[in-house]
Length: 149
Image (cartoon, helix red, strand yellow):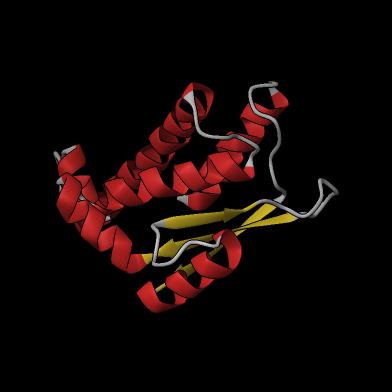
C-alpha cells in the first residue's frame, strides 16, 4: 500500500501537483514506548503520536524519507473513529506521505493526502479481489475486501 502511495505521489510530483517526492520511503512500526521516545527526540513532545514523518535529507537521487507509525495509536484511533484498521492505516500513511512530499497542514495537504489515501484503499481492494479470485469467492464488497486484506 505504501509503495502504491509513493508511486501516486511521484506521478503527482511529475505533474507539478506537489512540492517533492522522495525516491524511497521506509516505514518503522513502533509501540507506544518507542514512539513516545521518538516523539520527544524529534518533536519535543511527550507521549506517543500516531505517525511521524521525516523527509529525505536532500533531494538527490536515491534520497530516502522515513515514516514512524504507532501500531498502538492505530488500534486506539480505529476504535475511536469507528474505522476499519486498514482504512485508518491508509489515512495515516497518506498523511505521513504528504508531509515527506513537502506539504504542511492545510487544504492543499488534505487534497493531496486524500488522493494518496484513495490510491491506498484501491490497492487494498484490488489485493483482496485477487485473493478472493484465488480462493473462489465471488461478489466481495469493499467492506469484505478490507476485512480480508
